[in-house]
Image: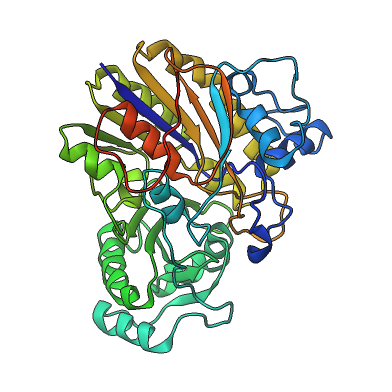
Length: 407
Protein backbone atom coordinates (compact mmCIF):
# COMPACT_ATOMS: atom_id res chain seq x y z
CA UNK A 1 0.00 0.00 0.00
CA UNK A 2 1.77 3.15 -1.24
CA UNK A 3 0.95 6.52 0.31
CA UNK A 4 2.73 9.88 0.34
CA UNK A 5 2.78 12.79 2.76
CA UNK A 6 3.95 16.33 1.94
CA UNK A 7 4.70 18.63 4.86
CA UNK A 8 5.12 22.24 3.73
CA UNK A 9 6.92 24.29 6.38
CA UNK A 10 5.48 27.45 4.87
CA UNK A 11 8.29 29.98 4.17
CA UNK A 12 11.23 27.91 5.54
CA UNK A 13 13.74 28.91 2.87
CA UNK A 14 17.34 27.71 3.19
CA UNK A 15 19.38 30.30 1.32
CA UNK A 16 19.11 32.92 -1.39
CA UNK A 17 18.59 31.77 -4.97
CA UNK A 18 20.99 32.86 -7.72
CA UNK A 19 18.36 35.34 -8.94
CA UNK A 20 17.56 36.69 -5.45
CA UNK A 21 19.18 40.04 -6.31
CA UNK A 22 16.30 40.66 -8.72
CA UNK A 23 13.96 40.66 -5.72
CA UNK A 24 16.22 42.49 -3.26
CA UNK A 25 16.79 39.23 -1.37
CA UNK A 26 20.41 38.34 -2.20
CA UNK A 27 21.37 37.82 1.46
CA UNK A 28 18.21 36.03 2.59
CA UNK A 29 18.45 32.75 4.47
CA UNK A 30 15.42 32.03 6.64
CA UNK A 31 16.61 28.88 8.45
CA UNK A 32 20.28 29.88 8.46
CA UNK A 33 19.66 33.28 10.01
CA UNK A 34 17.24 31.90 12.59
CA UNK A 35 19.87 29.35 13.68
CA UNK A 36 22.53 32.08 13.89
CA UNK A 37 20.27 34.26 16.02
CA UNK A 38 19.50 31.35 18.33
CA UNK A 39 23.17 30.51 18.87
CA UNK A 40 23.92 34.17 19.58
CA UNK A 41 21.19 34.32 22.23
CA UNK A 42 19.09 36.68 20.13
CA UNK A 43 16.06 34.39 19.85
CA UNK A 44 15.28 33.70 23.48
CA UNK A 45 11.78 34.16 24.85
CA UNK A 46 9.55 32.61 27.50
CA UNK A 47 9.18 29.45 25.40
CA UNK A 48 12.71 28.73 24.23
CA UNK A 49 16.38 29.72 24.57
CA UNK A 50 19.82 28.85 23.26
CA UNK A 51 20.85 27.10 20.05
CA UNK A 52 18.15 25.91 17.67
CA UNK A 53 17.29 22.39 18.84
CA UNK A 54 15.94 20.32 15.93
CA UNK A 55 17.40 16.81 16.32
CA UNK A 56 14.75 15.06 14.21
CA UNK A 57 14.91 17.47 11.28
CA UNK A 58 18.71 17.27 11.47
CA UNK A 59 18.59 13.47 11.54
CA UNK A 60 16.44 13.48 8.39
CA UNK A 61 18.79 15.84 6.55
CA UNK A 62 17.50 19.42 6.89
CA UNK A 63 20.72 20.90 8.27
CA UNK A 64 22.74 19.18 5.54
CA UNK A 65 20.32 20.50 2.91
CA UNK A 66 20.91 24.00 4.29
CA UNK A 67 24.67 23.58 4.06
CA UNK A 68 24.40 22.35 0.48
CA UNK A 69 22.24 25.34 -0.42
CA UNK A 70 24.29 28.17 1.12
CA UNK A 71 27.71 26.59 1.68
CA UNK A 72 27.71 27.08 5.44
CA UNK A 73 26.91 24.67 8.25
CA UNK A 74 23.84 25.47 10.30
CA UNK A 75 24.86 27.39 13.41
CA UNK A 76 24.83 25.16 16.49
CA UNK A 77 24.30 21.90 14.57
CA UNK A 78 25.88 18.63 15.66
CA UNK A 79 27.94 17.94 12.55
CA UNK A 80 28.53 14.31 13.55
CA UNK A 81 24.92 13.40 12.75
CA UNK A 82 24.59 11.30 9.59
CA UNK A 83 21.31 12.00 7.77
CA UNK A 84 18.87 9.11 7.41
CA UNK A 85 16.86 10.61 4.57
CA UNK A 86 17.28 11.76 0.99
CA UNK A 87 18.14 15.44 1.21
CA UNK A 88 18.98 18.42 -0.98
CA UNK A 89 17.50 21.71 -2.09
CA UNK A 90 15.38 22.97 -4.98
CA UNK A 91 15.56 26.12 -7.10
CA UNK A 92 12.29 27.82 -8.02
CA UNK A 93 11.58 28.27 -11.74
CA UNK A 94 8.37 30.27 -11.26
CA UNK A 95 8.83 34.00 -11.70
CA UNK A 96 7.43 35.13 -8.36
CA UNK A 97 8.05 34.27 -4.70
CA UNK A 98 4.39 33.95 -3.73
CA UNK A 99 2.42 31.12 -2.15
CA UNK A 100 0.51 29.82 -5.20
CA UNK A 101 3.56 29.82 -7.49
CA UNK A 102 5.65 27.87 -4.99
CA UNK A 103 2.91 25.37 -4.21
CA UNK A 104 1.90 24.81 -7.84
CA UNK A 105 5.48 24.21 -8.94
CA UNK A 106 5.90 21.45 -6.33
CA UNK A 107 3.30 19.18 -7.98
CA UNK A 108 4.51 19.93 -11.47
CA UNK A 109 3.25 23.34 -12.67
CA UNK A 110 5.82 26.17 -12.65
CA UNK A 111 4.38 29.62 -13.36
CA UNK A 112 6.37 31.12 -16.29
CA UNK A 113 5.11 34.67 -15.83
CA UNK A 114 4.94 37.31 -13.10
CA UNK A 115 1.58 37.88 -11.44
CA UNK A 116 0.09 41.35 -11.24
CA UNK A 117 0.78 43.36 -8.10
CA UNK A 118 -0.31 46.72 -6.74
CA UNK A 119 2.06 49.73 -6.60
CA UNK A 120 3.58 50.88 -3.32
CA UNK A 121 1.61 54.11 -3.36
CA UNK A 122 -1.25 55.30 -1.21
CA UNK A 123 -3.90 54.73 -2.36
CA UNK A 124 -2.56 51.61 -4.08
CA UNK A 125 -5.69 50.15 -5.70
CA UNK A 126 -6.91 51.40 -9.08
CA UNK A 127 -9.79 53.84 -8.64
CA UNK A 128 -12.01 52.17 -11.30
CA UNK A 129 -11.64 48.81 -9.54
CA UNK A 130 -12.58 50.27 -6.15
CA UNK A 131 -15.51 52.15 -7.68
CA UNK A 132 -16.80 48.88 -9.16
CA UNK A 133 -16.18 47.12 -5.85
CA UNK A 134 -18.27 49.66 -3.95
CA UNK A 135 -21.05 49.61 -6.55
CA UNK A 136 -21.31 45.81 -6.64
CA UNK A 137 -21.00 45.27 -2.88
CA UNK A 138 -23.17 48.20 -1.79
CA UNK A 139 -20.44 49.46 0.53
CA UNK A 140 -19.97 53.18 1.12
CA UNK A 141 -16.19 53.05 1.19
CA UNK A 142 -13.10 51.18 2.34
CA UNK A 143 -10.31 51.71 4.85
CA UNK A 144 -6.63 51.13 4.23
CA UNK A 145 -6.02 51.06 0.47
CA UNK A 146 -2.30 50.55 1.03
CA UNK A 147 0.54 48.07 1.48
CA UNK A 148 0.58 46.86 5.07
CA UNK A 149 1.25 44.07 7.53
CA UNK A 150 -2.04 42.34 8.31
CA UNK A 151 -1.64 42.46 12.06
CA UNK A 152 -0.44 46.07 12.04
CA UNK A 153 -3.28 47.40 9.91
CA UNK A 154 -5.92 45.62 12.01
CA UNK A 155 -4.43 47.16 15.13
CA UNK A 156 -4.35 50.59 13.48
CA UNK A 157 -7.74 50.59 11.78
CA UNK A 158 -9.76 47.92 13.60
CA UNK A 159 -11.59 50.36 15.88
CA UNK A 160 -12.48 52.65 12.97
CA UNK A 161 -13.74 49.61 11.05
CA UNK A 162 -16.05 48.64 13.91
CA UNK A 163 -17.34 52.23 14.15
CA UNK A 164 -17.91 52.81 10.43
CA UNK A 165 -18.62 49.29 9.12
CA UNK A 166 -16.11 49.84 6.30
CA UNK A 167 -13.83 46.90 5.44
CA UNK A 168 -10.05 47.20 5.70
CA UNK A 169 -8.49 46.54 2.28
CA UNK A 170 -4.74 46.15 1.87
CA UNK A 171 -2.04 44.32 -0.06
CA UNK A 172 1.61 43.27 0.09
CA UNK A 173 4.45 42.61 -2.35
CA UNK A 174 2.56 39.45 -3.34
CA UNK A 175 -0.19 39.31 -5.93
CA UNK A 176 -3.00 39.68 -3.41
CA UNK A 177 -6.01 41.78 -2.39
CA UNK A 178 -6.78 41.26 1.31
CA UNK A 179 -9.93 42.23 3.18
CA UNK A 180 -10.00 42.31 6.98
CA UNK A 181 -13.26 42.62 8.92
CA UNK A 182 -14.56 41.87 12.40
CA UNK A 183 -16.39 38.54 12.59
CA UNK A 184 -19.01 39.84 15.02
CA UNK A 185 -19.68 43.34 13.72
CA UNK A 186 -19.34 42.71 9.98
CA UNK A 187 -20.00 38.97 9.72
CA UNK A 188 -18.26 36.08 7.98
CA UNK A 189 -20.92 35.51 5.33
CA UNK A 190 -20.77 39.17 4.31
CA UNK A 191 -16.98 39.04 4.24
CA UNK A 192 -16.98 36.00 1.98
CA UNK A 193 -19.58 37.66 -0.27
CA UNK A 194 -17.54 40.79 -0.86
CA UNK A 195 -14.36 38.74 -1.32
CA UNK A 196 -16.04 36.80 -4.11
CA UNK A 197 -16.94 40.09 -5.81
CA UNK A 198 -13.37 41.34 -5.35
CA UNK A 199 -11.99 38.15 -6.92
CA UNK A 200 -14.00 38.77 -10.06
CA UNK A 201 -12.77 42.36 -10.28
CA UNK A 202 -9.10 41.48 -9.79
CA UNK A 203 -9.03 38.78 -12.46
CA UNK A 204 -8.34 41.25 -15.29
CA UNK A 205 -5.43 42.67 -13.27
CA UNK A 206 -3.88 39.17 -13.06
CA UNK A 207 -4.07 39.20 -9.25
CA UNK A 208 -3.83 35.62 -8.07
CA UNK A 209 -5.53 35.78 -4.64
CA UNK A 210 -8.19 37.56 -2.65
CA UNK A 211 -7.89 36.68 1.04
CA UNK A 212 -10.63 37.03 3.63
CA UNK A 213 -8.98 38.03 6.92
CA UNK A 214 -11.52 37.95 9.76
CA UNK A 215 -10.58 39.05 13.27
CA UNK A 216 -12.14 39.35 16.72
CA UNK A 217 -11.54 41.46 19.82
CA UNK A 218 -12.78 44.80 21.09
CA UNK A 219 -9.72 47.06 21.10
CA UNK A 220 -6.35 47.40 19.39
CA UNK A 221 -4.80 45.62 22.35
CA UNK A 222 -6.74 42.41 21.81
CA UNK A 223 -7.61 42.27 18.09
CA UNK A 224 -6.59 38.87 16.76
CA UNK A 225 -7.11 37.15 13.42
CA UNK A 226 -9.12 33.94 13.45
CA UNK A 227 -8.87 30.58 11.68
CA UNK A 228 -11.80 31.50 9.42
CA UNK A 229 -9.43 32.91 6.83
CA UNK A 230 -10.40 32.00 3.29
CA UNK A 231 -8.24 32.25 0.17
CA UNK A 232 -9.95 32.73 -3.19
CA UNK A 233 -7.19 31.66 -5.56
CA UNK A 234 -6.90 31.57 -9.33
CA UNK A 235 -6.94 27.89 -10.39
CA UNK A 236 -3.60 26.34 -11.41
CA UNK A 237 -2.70 27.07 -15.02
CA UNK A 238 -2.35 23.37 -15.87
CA UNK A 239 -3.08 19.94 -14.41
CA UNK A 240 -1.05 19.25 -11.26
CA UNK A 241 -0.10 16.04 -9.50
CA UNK A 242 -3.29 16.49 -7.47
CA UNK A 243 -5.48 16.50 -10.60
CA UNK A 244 -3.72 13.51 -12.10
CA UNK A 245 -3.77 11.47 -8.91
CA UNK A 246 -7.48 12.08 -8.36
CA UNK A 247 -8.27 11.29 -12.00
CA UNK A 248 -6.39 8.00 -11.77
CA UNK A 249 -8.22 6.63 -8.76
CA UNK A 250 -6.15 8.15 -6.00
CA UNK A 251 -7.11 10.50 -3.19
CA UNK A 252 -5.74 13.86 -2.06
CA UNK A 253 -6.36 14.97 1.52
CA UNK A 254 -5.78 18.68 2.07
CA UNK A 255 -4.58 19.78 5.50
CA UNK A 256 -4.74 23.53 6.14
CA UNK A 257 -4.90 25.95 3.23
CA UNK A 258 -3.82 23.52 0.48
CA UNK A 259 -7.36 23.28 -0.94
CA UNK A 260 -7.61 27.07 -1.12
CA UNK A 261 -4.22 27.38 -2.85
CA UNK A 262 -5.27 24.90 -5.53
CA UNK A 263 -8.77 26.38 -5.84
CA UNK A 264 -10.10 23.00 -4.63
CA UNK A 265 -8.89 21.25 -7.80
CA UNK A 266 -7.92 17.64 -7.35
CA UNK A 267 -8.90 17.70 -3.66
CA UNK A 268 -10.80 14.72 -2.22
CA UNK A 269 -11.07 15.91 1.37
CA UNK A 270 -10.32 19.21 3.11
CA UNK A 271 -9.38 19.51 6.79
CA UNK A 272 -8.70 22.85 8.48
CA UNK A 273 -6.97 23.78 11.73
CA UNK A 274 -6.31 26.79 13.92
CA UNK A 275 -2.52 26.48 14.23
CA UNK A 276 0.46 24.31 13.34
CA UNK A 277 -0.06 21.82 16.14
CA UNK A 278 -3.75 21.39 15.36
CA UNK A 279 -2.83 20.87 11.71
CA UNK A 280 -0.21 18.28 12.71
CA UNK A 281 -2.88 16.43 14.70
CA UNK A 282 -5.17 16.54 11.66
CA UNK A 283 -2.43 15.20 9.41
CA UNK A 284 -1.79 12.27 11.74
CA UNK A 285 -5.50 11.49 12.00
CA UNK A 286 -5.85 11.54 8.21
CA UNK A 287 -2.90 9.21 7.76
CA UNK A 288 -4.38 6.66 10.16
CA UNK A 289 -7.26 5.94 7.77
CA UNK A 290 -5.63 6.84 4.42
CA UNK A 291 -5.83 4.11 1.79
CA UNK A 292 -3.54 3.04 -1.03
CA UNK A 293 -2.62 5.79 -3.50
CA UNK A 294 -3.42 8.62 -1.07
CA UNK A 295 -1.51 11.89 -0.86
CA UNK A 296 -1.81 13.74 2.44
CA UNK A 297 -0.78 17.31 1.59
CA UNK A 298 -0.30 19.61 4.60
CA UNK A 299 0.60 23.28 4.85
CA UNK A 300 1.85 24.59 8.20
CA UNK A 301 1.08 28.26 7.80
CA UNK A 302 2.15 29.64 11.20
CA UNK A 303 5.83 29.75 10.20
CA UNK A 304 4.94 32.30 7.54
CA UNK A 305 1.88 34.18 8.77
CA UNK A 306 2.62 34.34 12.51
CA UNK A 307 6.40 34.61 12.55
CA UNK A 308 8.00 35.24 9.16
CA UNK A 309 5.86 38.19 8.10
CA UNK A 310 5.90 39.56 11.63
CA UNK A 311 9.71 39.28 11.74
CA UNK A 312 9.50 37.32 14.98
CA UNK A 313 12.75 35.35 15.09
CA UNK A 314 12.18 33.78 18.51
CA UNK A 315 8.62 32.79 17.62
CA UNK A 316 9.75 31.24 14.35
CA UNK A 317 12.52 29.29 16.12
CA UNK A 318 10.08 27.99 18.72
CA UNK A 319 7.65 26.93 15.98
CA UNK A 320 10.39 24.94 14.21
CA UNK A 321 11.31 23.24 17.48
CA UNK A 322 7.66 22.38 18.21
CA UNK A 323 7.31 20.91 14.71
CA UNK A 324 10.52 18.91 15.18
CA UNK A 325 9.24 17.32 18.39
CA UNK A 326 6.18 15.96 16.58
CA UNK A 327 8.03 14.19 13.76
CA UNK A 328 8.55 10.89 15.65
CA UNK A 329 4.74 10.62 15.91
CA UNK A 330 4.50 10.77 12.13
CA UNK A 331 7.32 8.27 11.67
CA UNK A 332 5.60 5.85 14.06
CA UNK A 333 2.43 5.94 11.93
CA UNK A 334 4.15 5.53 8.59
CA UNK A 335 3.92 2.10 7.03
CA UNK A 336 6.78 0.41 5.19
CA UNK A 337 5.65 1.65 1.77
CA UNK A 338 4.94 5.25 2.82
CA UNK A 339 7.15 8.17 1.84
CA UNK A 340 7.12 11.65 3.35
CA UNK A 341 8.54 14.94 2.08
CA UNK A 342 9.46 18.03 4.08
CA UNK A 343 9.79 21.19 2.01
CA UNK A 344 8.74 24.85 1.73
CA UNK A 345 7.19 27.16 -0.86
CA UNK A 346 9.49 30.23 -0.55
CA UNK A 347 11.38 32.07 2.17
CA UNK A 348 10.28 34.71 4.69
CA UNK A 349 13.47 35.61 6.50
CA UNK A 350 12.50 37.12 9.88
CA UNK A 351 15.86 38.90 10.14
CA UNK A 352 15.13 40.96 6.99
CA UNK A 353 13.67 44.45 6.87
CA UNK A 354 10.07 44.77 5.77
CA UNK A 355 7.54 41.97 5.97
CA UNK A 356 7.62 40.31 2.54
CA UNK A 357 8.57 36.84 1.32
CA UNK A 358 12.19 36.22 0.32
CA UNK A 359 13.46 34.50 -2.84
CA UNK A 360 15.21 31.36 -1.58
CA UNK A 361 15.96 27.73 -2.23
CA UNK A 362 13.66 25.30 -0.41
CA UNK A 363 14.58 22.06 1.34
CA UNK A 364 13.90 18.71 -0.28
CA UNK A 365 13.90 16.07 2.47
CA UNK A 366 12.34 12.68 1.71
CA UNK A 367 12.14 9.96 4.36
CA UNK A 368 10.51 6.58 4.98
CA UNK A 369 11.45 2.93 5.36
CA UNK A 370 12.16 2.61 1.62
CA UNK A 371 14.10 5.88 1.32
CA UNK A 372 17.88 5.68 1.39
CA UNK A 373 20.32 8.14 2.94
CA UNK A 374 21.76 10.28 0.15
CA UNK A 375 22.68 13.82 -0.79
CA UNK A 376 20.86 14.77 -3.99
CA UNK A 377 22.36 18.27 -4.10
CA UNK A 378 20.62 20.91 -6.19
CA UNK A 379 17.36 20.18 -7.96
CA UNK A 380 16.61 22.60 -10.77
CA UNK A 381 12.88 22.86 -10.11
CA UNK A 382 10.43 22.38 -7.27
CA UNK A 383 8.63 20.12 -9.78
CA UNK A 384 11.21 17.38 -9.15
CA UNK A 385 9.38 16.72 -5.89
CA UNK A 386 6.02 16.19 -7.59
CA UNK A 387 7.54 14.06 -10.32
CA UNK A 388 9.15 11.85 -7.67
CA UNK A 389 5.83 11.33 -5.88
CA UNK A 390 4.01 10.70 -9.17
CA UNK A 391 6.53 7.99 -10.00
CA UNK A 392 6.32 6.49 -6.52
CA UNK A 393 2.52 6.33 -6.58
CA UNK A 394 2.68 4.93 -10.12
CA UNK A 395 0.58 7.54 -11.86
CA UNK A 396 1.06 9.35 -15.15
CA UNK A 397 4.29 11.35 -15.37
CA UNK A 398 4.04 15.12 -14.93
CA UNK A 399 5.00 17.53 -17.71
CA UNK A 400 7.70 19.19 -15.62
CA UNK A 401 10.34 17.87 -13.24
CA UNK A 402 12.85 15.05 -13.02
CA UNK A 403 12.20 12.20 -10.62
CA UNK A 404 14.53 11.55 -7.71
CA UNK A 405 15.58 7.93 -7.16
CA UNK A 406 14.73 7.33 -3.51
CA UNK A 407 16.02 3.76 -3.14
